[in-house]
Image (tube, rainbow, N blue to C red; front, side):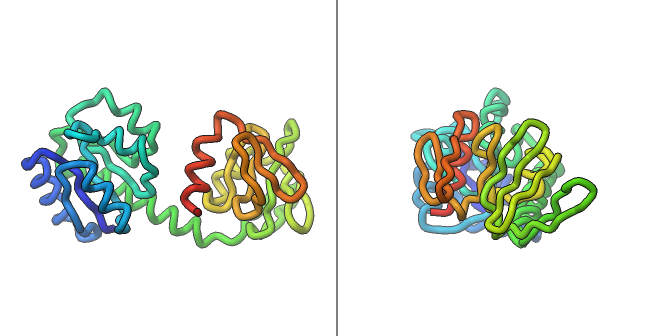
Length: 228
């Protein structure tokens, strides 16, 4: 995994450099002492993992994560525990409190590597099996249109047919990669490549208008932003 360090403390920079050099699966490609320079770099280069400090002059690590869409895994490295909840709300991979040991650093990297492998595996998935009655029916993911909640059932609408299942939305979300379909409402999940029009509060798939709720709006718009 190509990685960068965003850290304004020289000693912390050197510690992270040393830790990264001990891990053969990591390659350090750049080091920045401020978030603004790092932002310019990220707009022009691809990296897999960011080691990000929080308290820096100009733009803090949290402000960086809040102000722009960071499509890379992030491990926060900080002396301030009070930002932990905010960090996980922003979907960071892990949160390291200074001073941290190499063993704790390695745990965070292992988590990032596992997440990366999971994403690669999910991206290769072309179908799932859906429980319908006493059968398992194959569902090609490229045929999925949307999933609609109907009390105890989920109605899976495809380009070919529709399937009723007792599987929950959580179970379907675990099976279907987020790059393929996403929850946009407590009662709806939609295939991203089948959306014809996006509005603030709704999406159109063919002649079907499906609502986007406040709960899922931010994650939905972040996801479609990645594919633009």
